[in-house]
Image 1 (tube, rainbow, N blue to C red):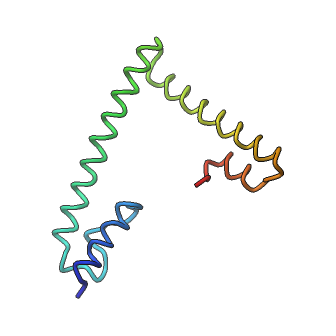
Image 2: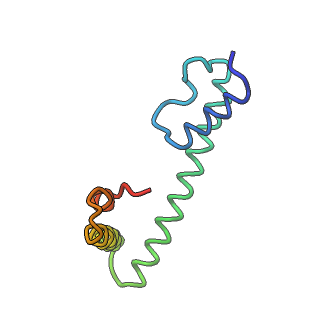
Image 3: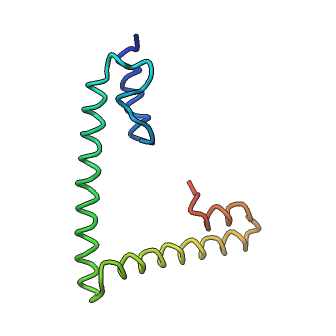
Length: 108
């Protein structure tokens, strides 16, 4: 039987990286209903937040006079440009691995 502390630790780990069916985690069968409720609550919160972000982006696109899709492309281009600028700075300092990580978006 898992302890309350272990259940909370499991929830925290899943919320950080939700790549598995939380409510069916082996060893936590006793908490299946609680874990399912937590999973659904988190997903609903994430969906709501994502919806709000989409609406904000659509308003920004409208301000710029472009479609939502074009706005997303602009955002991606800006992100890539920032990564390249950081990579160039790292390369100038001789930090090739940091430059690589900057380009890949793997910086901490």
